[in-house]
Image (cartoon, rainbow, N blue to C red; front, side):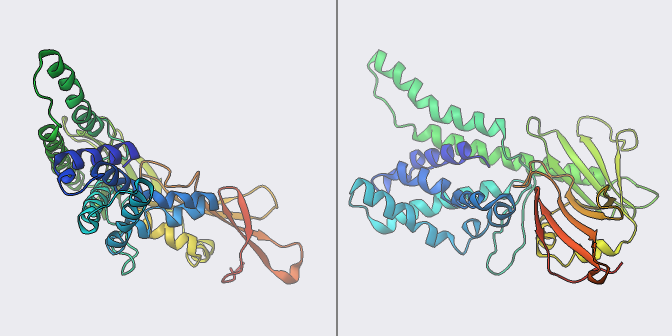
Length: 340
């Protein structure tokens, strides 16, 4: 999720009761609710580096207890407050778990099981930016301030917003639960049809950012990927609206690309991977293979497909020259030699 969502969730957690455990609970919760995204600093190494490290170890369960120590040390050093260490650490751990839980609902997924598995588990039920989640949390944030103004006018006692924060967190959980069941219905809808004369090999449904009743459906058959919009308010008919992404014929360049770490990493991440081999104008006889994540919302830290080029060498004794293109940055590649 976006950092506004994480920040507001940290505020709601503090107001809902974590502020009873330790001084500076609000600062601790907000800090910890955002600290897993410290991996964003990897963008300084380029977009490919960012793709490798984003939602990496800082989004794993194994590192969460260690990561929770950082906000405690930072807040104690900056404020010079005497914190009850275990309680302050517990507040930070809860806030970090809220971050992992929210990110787990996105199609991007998180590498939750590192270092034991490099898989990207995800629920695929919410967009990275969800206006309904924003609405719930913003109302929960501002309501105590508005009611406080009214209370001061009439001389009533001001509240800390605990009940409002609990209600906002409950509504957030209820909203995500509803989206989970709507996602399951979208998956079942996609599975209920025949494509190219056969049952689908795989179906995926990605959320749209505005309405939970519309989903971006993807269906894999033996010959292609199909992009199929799903509207849960209408009868589902995939034929008029389906867009086909046909599988390429077998090509040695794809086999070479599969051996490269960057392609292996994207293959592990991609839910709708699409390979294509294209000729290039210069030099004559050159080809390129691309692996594209066709369906998932967002750019995943990449500004375009990862491209692997096989270029004929000017020296016939050298065979072919292989280059790896990462968002416009060309690098010589020393790997398994391609035939041809």
